[in-house]
Image (cartoon, rainbow over all chains, first blue to last red; front, side, top):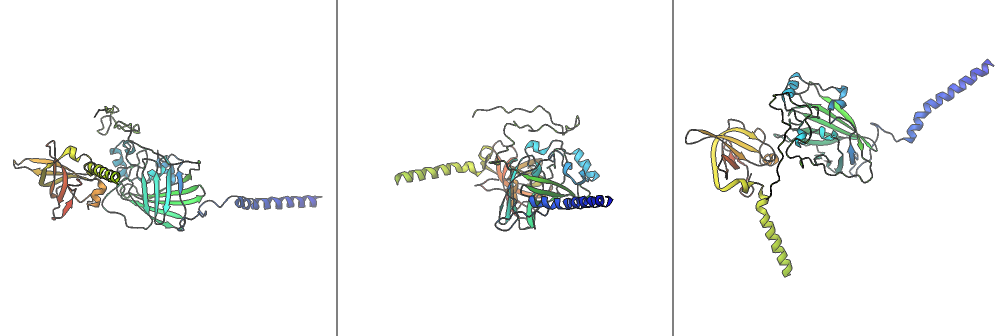
Length: 270
Length: 131
């Protein structure tokens, strides 16, 4: 009897073990292989197909430390000091372009289109665009631009975009995380599934941070039938005032303090 | 045939009529083609910015007094394509600059040409397409 019981237990144990080992395999058979090993479909010129309308679902636009590795931004003390003494109004409140990487995680969709030799990013936000050559050309020299100078290349399944010449006036988020004109951003776009891209950016700025730091987030495909990018304009109807409230008002008496009474432009007949 | 010709003439006429407006906004409203100016002085500020860049020059007048002249030029990217970088003009640099003065008679002008200390001529704008 004891022997029978023993063999029954053994049988149950074997069956349980078999079930346990076989379940991941069966799940994998149903789901396509996702994650870093996912192999994206290819465009006619053999590059990973990143095309489509994408969007983030996080709060990075408000505070980028949310998506930073270790939730930490490694500031140099002098950079923090500079930031404290710097402008207090988010540049986007005056319709400035958001800069890179902020443009990616603004809460608006963007569309990626590919052609042999370049990748086009069309952003609904302020109808910004980045036409990125994938030829690893040298960066331009001597000027700074709000969205910088982007140069791309392909590394296996990943589009790598190297960005320099970024205007020092842009912020990384509404929480006034700033940078200098030495900002260097390396973005990596890797498909991880039919409707997801992993977005990663390494942020380097020796005048602001003690070391390069990294942010990452998924980009989700907008799968709404018939969804199209539309117009997200900034200037109309603002009567010259900042369009967003001040996120962090300057201390009283600060020369950077703005009055909340904005002159309203009068319509003049011509 | 006659109708086609009439349409062609009208279209060409409209295009020509549009041209001064297309040259650049605000030139005709603000600047006077009959008031060319040429000054030599030291750079006090160079704003390489959008929509238009500005070059400020300290100019010593015949009376010995120094006046600040502001020259309006082209957009950041147009200036870049004409050879300018953000450090092309530095404070204290001695330059000669030509343009058309503002109608209001202030020390403001639309920039056309600039000569760098090494003698290199930089184009800021042209009469057809002012800076």
